[in-house]
Amino acid sequence: LMGGIAVSFALGGAAIAGLLLLHMAFDSAWTTILLSAAAVVPALATRWRSYPALGWISVGAVIAVLGRVAFDPTIVGAEFLSTTPVFNWLLPGYGIPAMAFGFAAWQLARTTNGRPRLAMEAAAALFALLTLAMLVRHAMHGGVIDTGAMTLAEQAIYTLIAIGAGAILVAIDMRSPSSVLRYGSMAAGVASVAFIVVRHFVVLNPLLSDESTGRIPVFNLLFLAYLLPAVAAGGLALYARDKRPKWYAQMLAVVAAVLALAYATLSVRRLFKGEFIGLWSGLGQLETYTYSALWLAIGVVLLTAGVRLKSQVLRIASAALIAIAVLKVFIFDMSELEGVLRALSFIGLGAVLIGIGLFYQRLLTRAAKEGSAAP
Image 1 (cartoon, helix red, strand yellow):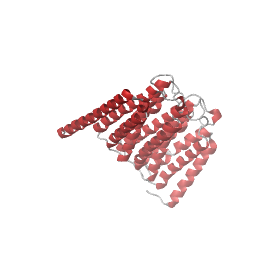
Image 2: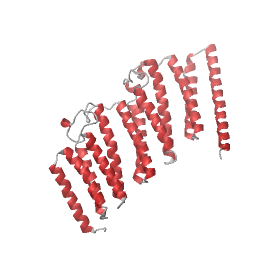
Image 3: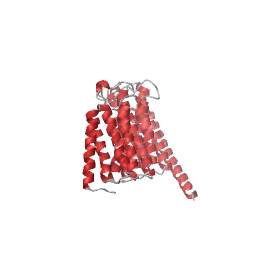
Image 4: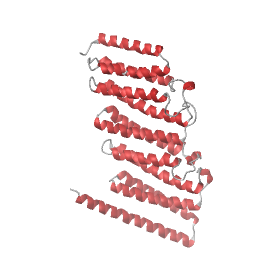
């Protein structure tokens, strides 16, 4: 039974009345939770009646919940929100809608399908991300989510959440194909790249902000903000390589490589300068030489990875990095050397470049042999 326009109007009116009743009968927290649970009812009803209006009523419940959380992101009011991390009203206030919308999408996919199902999938993904983001914000700001400047550590967690969401949406899309999941996964990946470029590299970069990188040698802010996102972005690039457009995987691969370079470079800076690595503390001669050697080494690693993974993007990135390192040596490093030391430096640099060329040739030869040996 599909129902007509009269049935649609009747169901829509009943839904609006029900939503208003919930709004007036309960406080803000329970209103948000019950409104999200109400989205499940019309989705379940499609088991017995295939009225198109039922799916859109579920979407209407999503809009109502979005309005509630936009009006009061704390769910219960800032003065009543507990400072206890994780186990507070934010968890059910955002988590239950995520589960309810996900179940409604699952149910609609098996009955009426169509655009309401896609809208419910998008809502479920959105609230799942909001759950994690709000809990992180709450935990890192002492129970207050609407004040306080964002730190690099907090931003790094958001970035990791976005990358993880992209991977999860790809995995779900492979099992249950959906345009929302397909484009949503790419949107999450692009958003994570935007976070990295704008926030990690510029706005919150400890090289520019002079934020403390922590006193622990390895597991510090640089590890969280650069190395972990590099590993995550690289993993997503590999996972999405044959599942998403070529440009998407290449974008993630380049960002992963740049993050790894940033981590290594800033770690060297921290080794020389300590906890605070702001640019205004100057550069030492040994530190400058160390960067050149490091960039050449990373260039070789990228070259190896590019050949092994048959990635042209990584090979181009390695060539660019090696070229930058060589130019740096010629323009900056050797400008302070004279006489025999300058000559020896030129000879050493030439030997290194010849070695890299021979190494690249050997990699290509080995890759060609492996390719010809493959069935």
